Image (cartoon, rainbow, N blue to C red; front, side, top):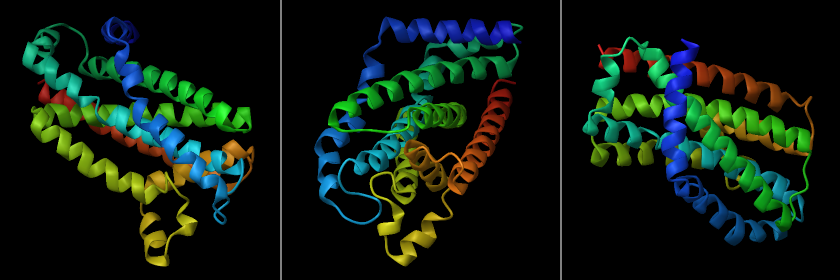
Length: 250
């Protein structure tokens, strides 16, 4: 199975390397927020904002935003492969169906890692001063999350089979989840009803964990809760995505 995953992974990475502009295209929106919105937070008081501390609050949110949109739209690729007959040709091979989707999700995880690292590097000249051990741990968490989200995205691509249906679905699901997670501003600044609503959103715990990691506070409760939720959510999404892929490929 490892050989099958590696073969699919290599194929996906070759496709990406032939057109690496997509790696940088996925960075455009987070960098725009970083450049045009981030400096405004330096003069905000409350919620742990103000001064250079604002970057340790804002950048982790941007990393999650990058992961959600980058991995969330991965299903576009499989819709195109369906149309071109790639999936049909792979179905007749002896490769396990799980390998076909895991190889793809691993390529998305590598892409997420590269984009996230570049975003952190760009944030340094703006004033980001963080625990680099915490930054590395955060990158591991979001890459793991990206694996699960991309698996679910591929599954939805197979279910919907059409870009016109897939795009609004992903946008309609991801945008409320991101806003309720406090990616732009901490939910501690929100009114009570919005804070209570955000507690039902698993992404809010991942954002909180990332912010504590950027502060270097590995022992904080938010870190362990966020890490546990990341692992559980990734496993759940990856399992569901794999099962859908297997059913659709039967």
